[in-house]
Length: 178
Image (cartoon, rainbow, N blue to C red; front, side):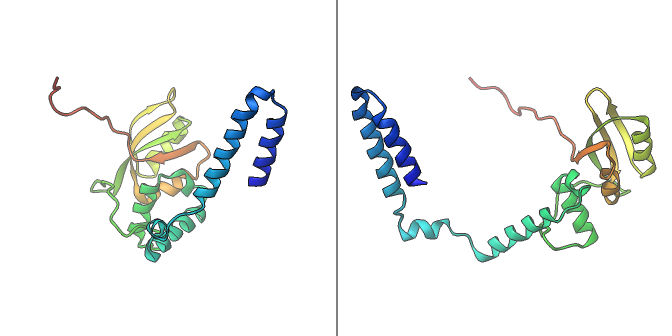
């Protein structure tokens, strides 16, 4: 890569008028010195960049879990999917900390569903144990209380694009100070 870059700079250098040759030469010197000094880092810098073996294993397990997801699981937000997997007792590639998903007494969680809204879909949500709060054909969204254990079933539908925790409004707290 360095040779290719150097050659292309040299070609451009000699194709320019003499006035810009000096500035081009200085550019080449800066590029070369940048490559020269970027390669030399202290042992402490390299040590600081390393992560622990356990952290590396956890990252690898999470990445492997994501690659192994089914097409339906890829349509479900990671937090919802991890909460579902924790509820099932799955541990491979699943974070060990509890996921903060609020469930109602019937095991349903509030979700926003990005989808092609239709009566057929709304009926299906109800049949799977969901309770539709709002829907908008214009904005392709449904907000519903939906059973955590039925998310994959709903996500497998072609008219469902993505299922995520609800987007909530944010407000500015406190008095405005000058």
